[in-house]
Amino acid sequence: MNENVPNHVAIIMDGNGRWAQNRGLKRTKGHQKGAEVLKKISEYVYDKKIKVLSVFAFSTENWKRDKEEIDYLMKLFIKAFKGNFNVIKEKGVKVVFSGLKNKLSKKVIDTMDKMQEETKNNKNGIFNICLNYGGQDEIIEATKKISALVKDNKIDVKDIDKELFSKNLFNDLPPIDLLIRTSGEYRISNFMLWQMAYAELYFTDTLWPDFNEEEFDKALDAFNKRERRFGGVKK
Ligand code: IPE
Ligand code: IPE
Ligand code: MG
Image (cartoon, rainbow, N blue to C red; front, side):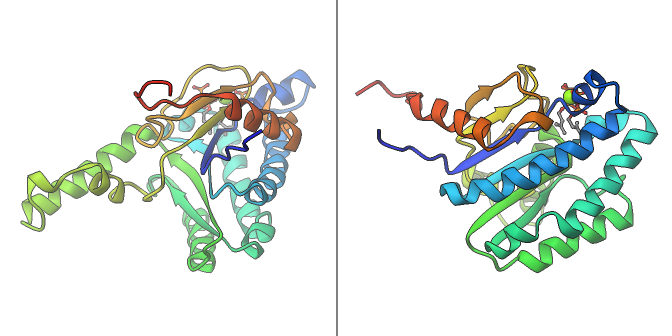
């Protein structure tokens, strides 16, 4: 079979809380297990010739949760950014973050900056971590930047096209080819709206802490069977 590998895979890692609750554990235990799964998956994808992996770590809507859960997640991010991704750094993958810096503590921002700085010249792939991220915010922020360019006469209104718009997003990433969402929820939850325009969507009932390499391969197999037409007609 002709192996059609997606260039950019995005994952909405959902179901940590339910995984823990099903076991009579605190929701935070689900996040802990979820972080281990992310480590494994991030080490796996780049060997599959996938170039870009985007993951949804924390949404702008997630601030609605209890303080205890949010505090736990922030500590988990710091810990993970300090150690969990050494293998992908060694593989030459560049780490970038998407999201707003507001509301994040200095400690979280410092570990994010350090990771970006250490990997900025890496060329073998991109790992895009969406943290305090909302797709609509990303589009609004880009619009503000572009408006300022027009106002300062740096560009003309007629220069605004998809390419320029993409360059003004949090990161200039290629379009998403395959979106995976775990935990049986069939929605996008404000994730990467611009980049998602022609993504193939794959939903699985598996909760994120139970996700693994085999589950990832199932998503790739499903992607392989899709016929992408981009508005054209089957040949
Ligand atoms: C996803 O799992 C992780 C984050 C949103 C940080 P959830 O915490 O949303 O788990 P469920 O959906 O409540 O099971
Ligand atoms: C989306 O999951 C955000 C992350 C995975 C970080 P949520 O669990 O927050 O989304 P909803 O509330 O089900 O839409
Ligand atoms: Mg959820």
